[in-house]
Image 1 (cartoon, helix red, strand yellow):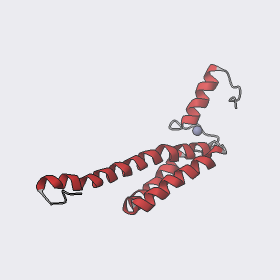
Image 2 (tube, protein in one colour):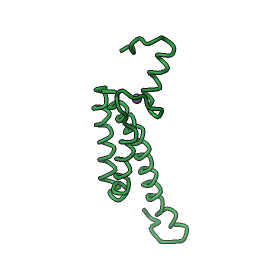
Image 3 (tube, rainbow, N blue to C red):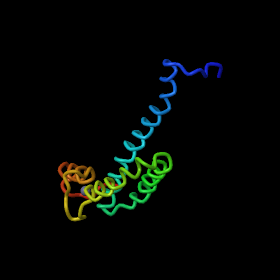
Amino acid sequence: MSTNKLSPAGRRVTDLPEVKRRRRLENLLYTRKPVAHLVAEYRSHGLDEHIELYFLQLEVEQVLADEFPDAYEDHVGDWDDEEVGAEHHPMVTAATCSLCHAIALHNGGDSGSPLAA
Ligand SMILES: [Zn+2]
């Protein structure tokens, strides 16, 4: 690097990693949200796949905790509420649950037969 001199124009360059970091944080948060939501839905329906997805969720959360400890602390409380909100009783159909929607669609088109594996 030959142009290490600090100048007003150079400041924009030094701000870039911060922008990248923020984008990475947002990406991680956006990735985590649907995964966590699916985990809660799969768990609600007693599907074993939630374990695999849960590991993915934990992985994303671990990266967040390592790279963005402050943001992790800020969000971890909301996540618990979101997950509890996304889960539902196995005997109840939830309007927010994509699996309930899929099952309802399936049952509507093909009266009551079990979902194909
Ligand atoms: Zn459901």
